[in-house]
Amino acid sequence: MKPIISIVGRPNVGKSTIFNRIIGYKKAITEDTPGVTRDRNYGEFEYNRGVFILADTGGFEPLAEDDIFRLVEKQIHVSMDESSAIIFVLDGKDGLLPQDVEIADILRRYNKTVFYVINKVDSQKREDAFSEFYKLGVKRFYPISAIHGIGIGDLLDDVYSALYDGEHRLRENNRGFKGSKSRREGLDDEKNKQKVPTDILIAIVGRPNTGKSSIVNRILGSERMIVSDIPGTTRDAVDTKITFKGREIILVDTAGLRRKSKISAKVEGYSVSSAIRTIERAHVVNLIIDAAEGISHQDAGIAHMVISRGKGLCIVINKWDLVKEDNKQSEYGKVVMERIPHCSFVPIVFTSARTGKNIGRITETDIKIFMQLNRTINTSELNKAMEGFLRKASIPRIQGKQVKIFYANQITTYPPTFLLFSNHPELIPEHYKRYLENSLREKYAFTGAPIRLFFRKK
Image (cartoon, rainbow, N blue to C red; front, side, top):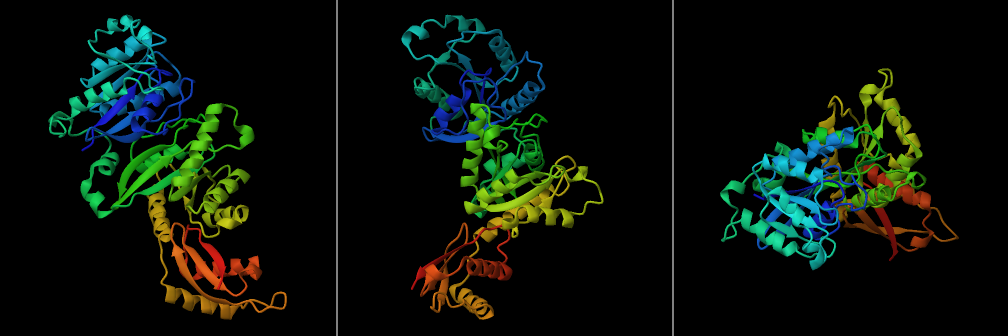
């Protein structure tokens, strides 16, 4: 069992910087702009033989009336509910503000272990000046500088002591948490971990406001992500681990991908970079399309990016319940393939996050694609199939030379990659290479999985 520790505080006090510092790498977006973090962002770290799950949360604004802050606040309360301890971050430069007092009052109602951290304390002089924080009625504060790493060790020493005993065992009162069933199974079901040791990393990408977070919420069966009609609500790439039919899956919701000309704020630039990095590390990518808006040039670009990086791809047509009944899925699918012809091998799932229709098919399809990415074809079987392809359509003489392909073998997976040996590999025309790829797909499917062919001189 791994205890969860939530980091809370008003906007722009350095919560995400502390999060990145503790887990040891830059996972959360950090920017000197209030409200950058919105969804809960989880990361795992080890300290003194203890294993912890750290949750970064959005800026707590108890007095704000904006709808987006109400959504953020809901996520913060869910995070604190499931936590064994809470790190409450205050700003040493700003001093004690009314919002801090309000948050402290809310925390007292939770009856949790709370660590009061004063961030941005990078000198002894500044440390001497925060006596005003004692108005909160707290005996122990932790002055730190997240940017410089000052004071983090003292904080983690006490966090460890509060949650683990002297023999490195989790204390009885910290042996569980109240997370959703899907998240609890994904993080703590050791039996499932032994059965399926490999995590499948599935990314959710697409243009802004296509319903990516709503789909994630449906898959998880809870309001894990903030959902809003405001484009750009999700900015960080947020990981959630679940178990689905015996498979351990890491589900990643990402920020909406805009064209470069549309990226006006620096933080949105970070969000796009984060989404692209998520595609780089994913096994399978779900490209979410708004059924009413249809396929755009940018969607085709995202699909090309996914395939060129050797990732599995599933096209998800969301909001299908809003499309007229006379619009058939088969006809819509033909239009999709006309717009992105290089995705002819990619499955299409028609769904509705609002009604929940076909939500389960998304994850089922992703797992099938993952299996195709990992598919291996026996060398003798592959060469027997290749002989048939060559007999059906032989390579014509090129520059007076008879080009031959002697044999082939599969050299790797993720994606399936094949090496073919020829007497003149440099003369094999592109159209014939496409013929061989299409023939392999016709025989072995490789649904949703890109395949690569390399040619070498014998």
